[in-house]
Picture 1 (cartoon, rainbow, N blue to C red):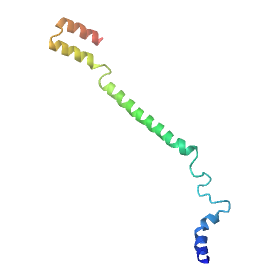
Picture 2 (picture 1 turned 90 degrees about the horizontal axis):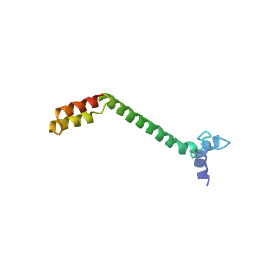
Picture 3 (picture 1 turned 180 degrees about the vertical axis):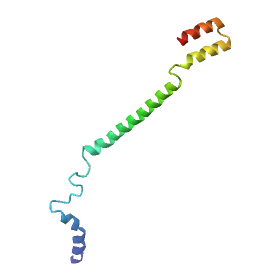
Picture 4 (picture 1 turned 60 degrees about the vertical axis):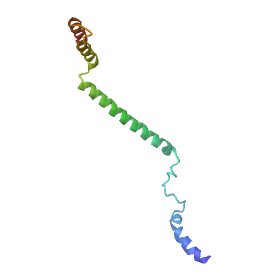
Length: 100
């Protein structure tokens, strides 16, 4: 028994240095509080906002690169004229309408 007393005393020395209790977390406990639960949720919200901002920025820059107008209608009109589905007068009238 005496052989175990000295090693146990040496191991228990840090705990005995604090007479009010072994408080290695400086009063913050073991992390089972609100910060443990809501901390990761907060980081997920922040990460989601960053990703949403990047997506919004990329889409906005893509819209400015095309001039803000949809080229789909003019491209479809050009294809219909090229296939011969509409004549030149109809093509000019529709192109003027789409340009305005």
